[in-house]
Length: 434
Image (tube, rainbow, N blue to C red; front, top):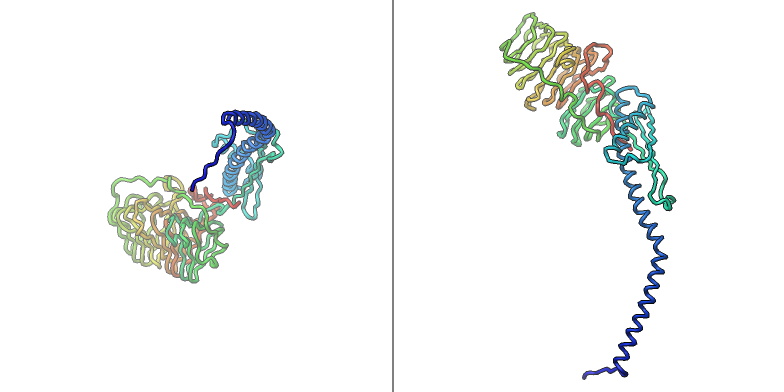
């Protein structure tokens, strides 16, 4: 059953009454909206102003914080290289911050900066504090935002100032590896493993390591045998000698040189087919560059090799081996392309090559051992470096096995042999800690 509802009265009159009612409502509503908008306008302007100036404040804060981080790292690196005074570090920090702000296209009309740098010598830390006034566009809201932007950054030196060991391997475990009863002593210098592996630096069994500082880009195994305690998650170093050119050379000067039970002097030149010294030989190397190509640099028996102002370049297919009963007494060149480099392994060598010292009397090796593609192994009961003014090792890997003692001094003032750039005074020794 359906139901119909009817309205009484004249339909035209009803439409007219309804239209009049709507007109009255519209007039009333227009007035209400105007009043409401008038009341809300100051609040809306305040909200918009706060939003704009808060965005500006946040942007300025982020820019200043990034600049302070860069300045703290720069100041820490500066401190690691010299005994820089606090006022000089402040100048360094301010210069870096201004350069960073310019690079970030911060307006040149921005308010002036106040920069301070404080040194905590015991922790080898630099704290940089930068303050910059904040001027809002909407003065009425100044009370809602700070009047200054403040940035604070702390950087710590993780290697001051000289490198004993830099293992260049960037990912595999055991870039620095000590086992059995091996000992390594870094006298006044630092040990770095570039490997990001959780086991980038390993000291196991009864092995011991001591240095000015010890740092691993990854993790550390055997921290209890390392003095001082190793720092993990350090920054990775670039190869400090990557720009050093290899020596240029032509054809062979000597072929298949084999010294057996002889006392001889050898002249600089290109030794093709390797260089072998065995028996009870004594070989004196005259000053200069020795290029050893396509064969081993092999010293065995009870042989002795010596030389002052000598450097050895190991070609693409050359490795070195020094036996346990040999005696080594070598000081590197003081001038030329090879200055400061005692051994320089070709950058084209296969990483399967190893360069090994077993010698129980290799106490005088003055200079840097640079093997960027290979492992440097000190094995047996080798005694290496103890009588050297300085010895530094930059190699893909450093491995000490059995019971050797490797001593790496950094007494640069006791020799006229130059420490290569990037070895004497590391260029990337700092990291942010706050």
